[in-house]
Image (cartoon, rainbow, N blue to C red; front, side, top):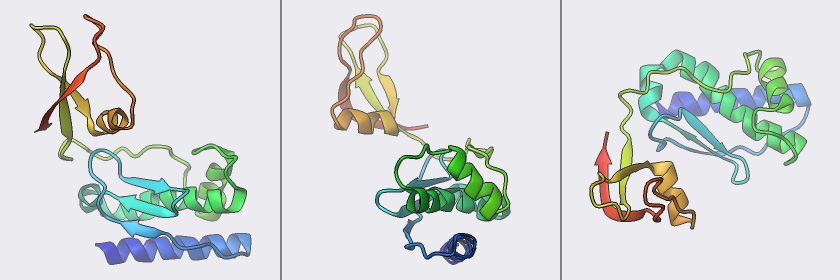
Length: 165
């Protein structure tokens, strides 16, 4: 699996280099993305992450569209700079003109089998079930953001428990 994705990434870069007549730095590629996202481009780190579960279930489309979608983010950033929107006109132009693909923001893969970890939080309400926050929201809490219970207005507190759903 990683070989096919790495080859597709390289093919996309070569297409972009021919189109723009310049060279682009190649990214670090990881296959440790989980959850509902098929791929993620970390533009400041020049890094791509791909979801192996969604790849296995959608190989052909994933290779053709998802890989190009994420590479387009890095190419757009390297070519146009940091004053761009993630799915803005420059990214759309790379998708359509360079890769000859539709500039779709989201995939429509079945994500029901993708394992999701939720983190349990509580408030001051005594009769309330714990809140199950997503991994993304839990990461935001670890960075200093906080969430409030709508009923008691208390800050949610992590219970040091996780659940798979």
